[in-house]
Length: 237
Image (cartoon, rainbow, N blue to C red; front, side, top):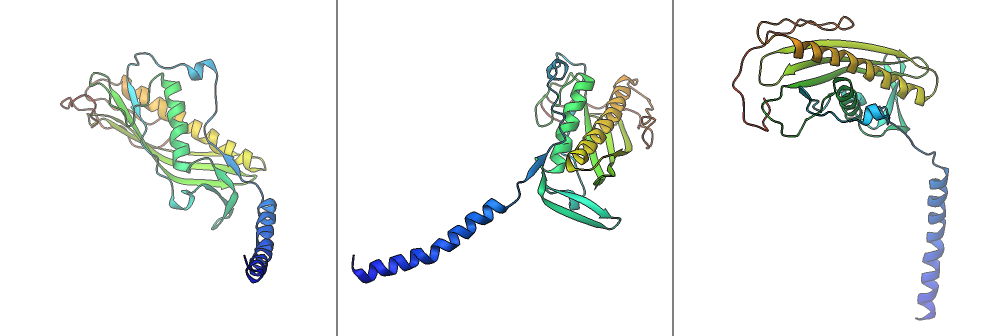
């Protein structure tokens, strides 16, 4: 290698070195990200026990949430019409996924059943589909965590359906851990109300039944169930 080429190589390396150092310093100075989940993390024997031959099954499809909060970053209210997106405070997965997973876990435990969403199931076992549409998912640091959700329970393959609305506001202390905990309690409250509706619908007579929403929710009575031809195993109506 000629001396001119060596000199030029050294000059390029010298110019690149400050950029490398600046990048390293920037990485060291960036605040760490924190991740939150709505799952309870309950590992007690009761929580881990699986249902054996349940009398009915449930389906919990993906949950709809407002577009402005459908992101990994926490979106907090700073005023009635203002929000702030927190880059370092994040959900472990998208809020809709977090809510669906938490609801599925809670409902299967409360009802002693299995969530068969996306999984084939036998025709002989009744299935109740739980659909949830979150209208508001508000995070007020040091104040409250609010979830306003419209949800329905439908007996698959029949016309029996119950549609209700739950509005749950949980007081929270300061800090984002407390805020995530408030949303976790709100989801648990909604799952308790849904579980009551599933039990009522499952216990209703096969024809002409009228089931109302739980006392803590609002909504119309369920439509009467109607007979429908059984579909092939593994299909969903």
